[in-house]
Length: 194
Image: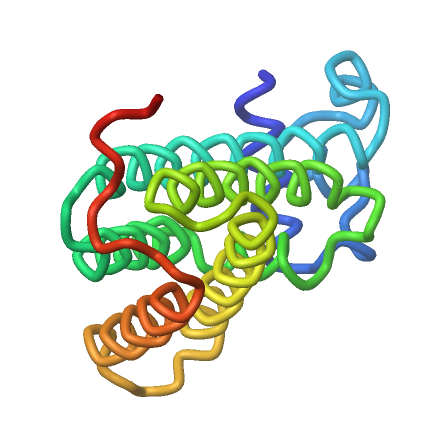
């Protein structure tokens, strides 16, 4: 039943937006009574929170995996390229849901999004420190690069500007690697963490 409610909630959120999503609409889309919905979720925000949580869990797992697989590579451009492709892939699989998450959810529901971005910031900062960027500069650079990549990839998927995807990947890869070089990034990671 939970899966049915979550699927219906996702459908209503995407079709009608956060403000128009209601427990009555979600229950109707699930083919159940509002009372049945309340047995599993106390209100609309609990349903939306579950949808958001699942979406962000998937996004975080896949982007984190891409970071961890790509960052040990000797060539930073290859690592950045792989991460950008992974981000576009995961956002592009459910663009309507991602649009609802990015544009419609109130700030109070965004705590998980902020926490996710901060975890990615930390992964990026650790990788930068491992390549010789001083810690404070690494944190600022990571924050800037992560927000830039997030904005460009999300905008590309949601706006559908008509550009070839690979051109956007190459442009973003070039922009990020150029910025990283300016931050004092060494081309190879430290092999000895001590």
